[in-house]
Length: 111
Length: 119
Image (cartoon, rainbow over all chains, first blue to last red; front, side, top):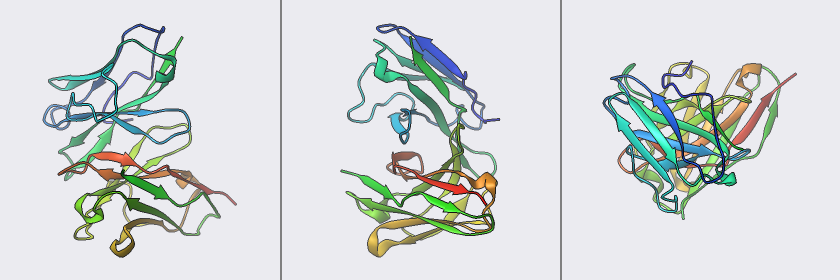
């Protein structure tokens, strides 16, 4: 099982707002930045959010991230069919001499 | 623009070795860490570790010690992942991913290399 916990699936209709949660602990989310990745079917992951809530150049502002304590969330507003993908949260974990950890991933379906 | 181009798919027999390459362009190779990430079929992302491209010092995640080796050829801006004594459970897509500014956090990703281990 993954160090960071995500729901395995989420869904929404076009135009809707959906959120994906990510739960961790004091050694990862609680003390380090959270990152989010989008993996479209058959492609490599792409950085979507860094340092909790920052968007890399080119990422639409429909995507937003937030963090509170040992949990984080990714919100997608104005849902589009092309948003159908797997989403992963990630963070540095201070245990075991330090390691990068991912959530198990959430498959987002646009109905 | 930053690009990471990985070598092509590999089909190997159990017990063999494989070496995956990751050629970087569009930035100064030695200024950013390089991560390696594994994704087994139908599964999530698993961080294998990273290599300091300035010093060549590798750091391996738990579960990726012994048979896994990260290396570099800075003269051609290329990182390598070598896996020895391949097992069926090593079948996966392997990604290289450049670190972010000042850290390990995977930012730019290669297209992935599928390694299939089958007799």
